[in-house]
Length: 575
Ligand code: ADP
Ligand code: MG
Image (cartoon, rainbow, N blue to C red; front, side, top):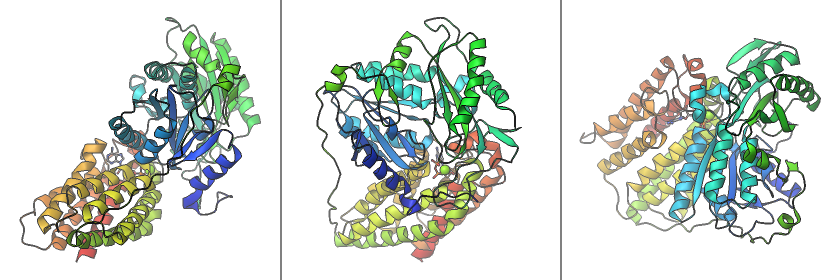
């Protein structure tokens, strides 16, 4: 049995850990809503680099905040994307007026939340660019490098982009060099054991003894193939061969000079990393490569997972200059900052904890809001009861956090709803705020999509009038239809959309029925449930589970199942 030894309340693990990290490195980082920014700010006009993602990967991402690398880090829950409002808050604190480059691993949840945050920030006049990191060669074919997921190669892209920003490059140039660093970086890892979420009683996956998994992910996604255990030199051979299969031609500025990162995943001894690195060096030199400033270290971890990944960045002169440039952050230091860099005048950062007063609605709309709050309360109880089952379902082809995400999301939504009821808010305000709280509390793909659905439902209603049954049904169907619109999934991709569309159609075809709301809702929920169960027969085409698509055959999609569970619970409450 594996456990996380040092934990208070598992749900607060990421927040507790961040708090201690900030206390330990207060000369580097200070807290803002949603994450951290540099303690000493940075020069006015300097392009700001904001990194981020879920927690559980330290040093990624907050450990890279400091002169020479990042200006801020957005910190989500364990293995869950931060929310759009967290992104917005950290970017606003980090921005020096020179534009901001957002860098994060290419995961659906992060793409959604960072994308939503960037859209809001652009509306506020901040020039925000997005570069997603996609270095993991196990996660997609070479012609789809941009669709791959991001793992330890994050370090190269972040370090290089940060050095370009520190060198005074404008936002266009920093964005361009970050893109080139990502195009030039390839990683592949092996897993010897799975990782355990704080508070969980067992790891997200296991690796049979005497074997290892090749092509691991960093969120408990197990390897894509299993192999008999080999001596370290043969594992080195396997990693080097596969990564170098994608070496670009030695032309156009690339002459075989490479940055190398041998990264421990969290529970692999440094001495073991060095054993492997000894073989890696020999193999790279045999191929005529020259290694530039290698890093053998833990830089992108996956909680307590045992394993190692090899990342190689195929350098040109500019990438090499930035890879070698000085940096001083809690977890990555190189060389010495120039006197000018150390003495540069900086901008004071104003902490920006955001609070908004809740406007009251009409008594009619507030009465409807109370009913909505009751349903969200039922969502919370239903999600808690199903948490373990949903987690197990998600662990089969995804990352095992869907149960936790649903509990965190529904809990946050129900809490926001209670605050709105106390303030006598209308139903529109209540649902919009509950949606934002859900997305923020849950992180993850499903949290962003549920947040969008609640937000759309709320925006289809009013804070003044009491909605008719028909208006409620239309608003709920509109909310459901926001999910495929935001997430891009179609029916048959094996996502929550497979249950949501039948639910929306079930409601829409009964709009003019004379039956009461509860009966219509129950009928549509039953159709959603049948569709959710039928997803067991197909393989996943979207989201994290796509990488392990066929492994999911025989198990229904967790997001579809949780959706139908909640809709049935809502129907029962309405009647
Ligand atoms: P994450 O995938 O970020 O870990 P969760 O585990 O909370 O998020 O949710 C997983 C569920 O999200 C999947 O079972 C699927 O139903 C849903 N999902 C993933 N990607 C999409 C998408 N693009 N559109 C709709 N639903 C999606
Ligand atoms: Mg998941």
